[in-house]
Image (tube, rainbow, N blue to C red):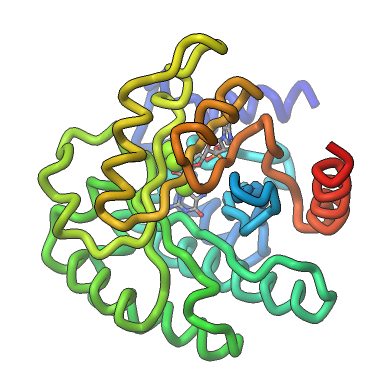
Length: 282
Ligand code: C2E
Ligand code: MG
Ligand code: MG
Ligand code: MG
């Protein structure tokens, strides 16, 4: 374990910055093997409708189940995967895994009908992306509306990305703007992007501090979303006070540790049962 710990430090700690090129070269090789060995796994975080307090869907979050280093979180490898281009095959594999999970849950009668998947700007910039996603939806006999793609503002500053977004939207796949409120492009592009949903970044939700203190930025963002006929999701909800404020402000959906942490697929059925039982008895 001591050895693995040292290895992990050398492998993943970029702040050391001893030899970044060597590190990235090793990572690239490790990525290819990881894809082949199916080491990328998805965890699922519930999204709750604030009107009914029922689980309405899940966001998929990729993890690298590394044979030596254990569970590696996306912030550790997505940036390098974007730099090397590996995020393209990996991202497609993530969408494939999400589609397969929806099929499995349908067979097992687990009430999860929609999954949201994060998409990198690098993927969205590829001309073949929309067709690949449509093919995966068709191959799994899913309704296109069962799949939602989460994109960020940085992704939309590019013509190919915009073409993909329109193609996906036309195919019936749902689109949501992730991390809203953190980008620097601000409101200028919002009207041009064909999204269905807006996810308020958790840094803004964190500004809802206590029972007396509503955040004017959050409540105005909710009003803005409504005016634009977008569904609005709050991410990073960590306290019951935040949840109450979001309900009062008219937010549609909430996601965060207070409602449920990301979990492996196997934990999802029991989580939903318990969550709904708890709400009914409340
Ligand atoms: P994101 O899409 O904004 O995902 C939300 C992140 O916030 C997740 O971290 C989640 O575990 C965390 N989170 C959820 N609720 C709370 C909360 O109440 N408090 C706090 N402090 N954190 C919360 P995670 O899983 O480490 O993912 C980080 C980022 O990695 C994601 O941010 C997303 O941008 C990226 N990512 C994840 N999966 C994929 C993927 O399959 N493809 C791509 N391209 N990026 C991915
Ligand atoms: Mg996301
Ligand atoms: Mg987010
Ligand atoms: Mg984020």
